[in-house]
Image (cartoon, rainbow, N blue to C red; front, side):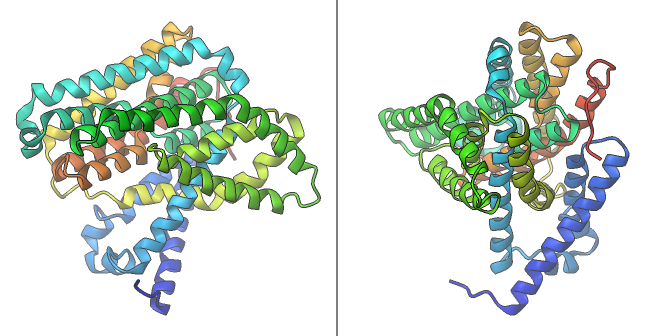
Length: 421
């Protein structure tokens, strides 16, 4: 294993300092413009990434953000841990009592919000075979299912940050978007895992089914007996003399173990902390809920979250392997599918036209979930570089549009969101 040198340590600290400084500066600018901070943080990442900084000053960019050595590994490790803690905070914000009250709307929203873009994504691979290059010739069914999944998932970390910034996390629109996105992502990643295990690796459907069954059991326990147990444990911890330092330590253990467990059963690691956050947050009311949220949110949101969202922009180079036809097709079809499917489901669930459209825009944010799926697909050879770039652009554009669109739609006297100061 390569040793971490003194120079690596200096460079690592400098990287994080620059990333955090840019995130705070651009996030503050967006706040002044009454936009979600996450939009500024994503913009900061694009400015620091290979598209602008890398193009204007390639040698300086290569020195500050090297692609090899110890520092990229250290940075990615910190960012992934930050994403896990952020997802725990997002789960802590979910109130299942509201979820039950909105169960009909959530069911319609998650169903149509996934089915419509999935069908469209599957169809465009066969309707426009010339745009997909060699991958469509090598394994058209695997590619079609992968694109369908990529267009149907959302980005829980991005959505959670947007809803927090807009003060919508505990309102009907926010609860519906978060719950529907969680269902879509769980189903999407399960489908993608099944595609890899069966169609690509040739494993039996029995093995893939067992993996899916384990994931269902974990989710069912978390949302059933687990949530009552989690609320009781958290209330007891709040009364302990070791609060809050002991609380942070225990939560850190739970976040890391749950992430490893989620990854082990075949779903993405972020769902572990998200489900644990839901489990721990139930039964907390009033001052105890406020205290628990403040303790962990200061730890997760002030440092880790900005670094994570800046890192999203660092991973994309819009100049390399850019195919305007492919990018346009993916962006238009994915956005239309999510907006129509999500809004239709929310409208059938009883929401107003404005609220339903806000739900559609909320679900349309793809963010890092899209990038992760695209990276895995590229690693397995399912997609090539132009498709990867198209999916990355989809992730960034939809993530940056969702917050302002939701803010505009919800800027109504009766449903005006609360902004952070």
